[in-house]
Length: 116
Image (cartoon, rainbow, N blue to C red; front, top):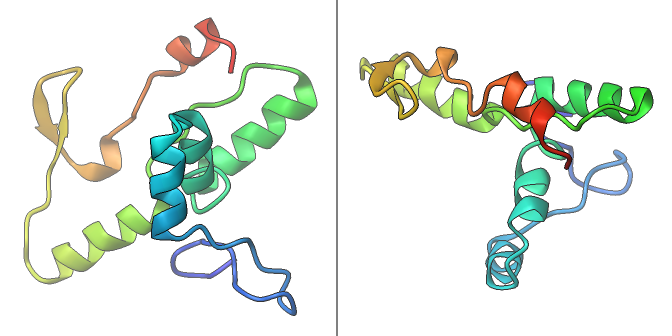
């Protein structure tokens, strides 16, 4: 994996991942494969915490973890903060603006309720 973005490397020689381009993303959206698309763009790509939790859930036979924020988004936020921009994420569950490092997409209790 790349050190900065935590995305899979490219190329067969480096044991890289399969590239998912813009047209492939559109095709998955058109077919209504939202969960597959979410998995490909987060857990199988650059969601460090999600990668570990999904592996543990599969090994232990538990519910699959809901993906968090992709590392590429976190890199973008850091770059914008480096340009002196105050980037805030809106947490719609609590109806307030919070720092992007505090955002959770779903609580773990909700994840335990549903099977993936």
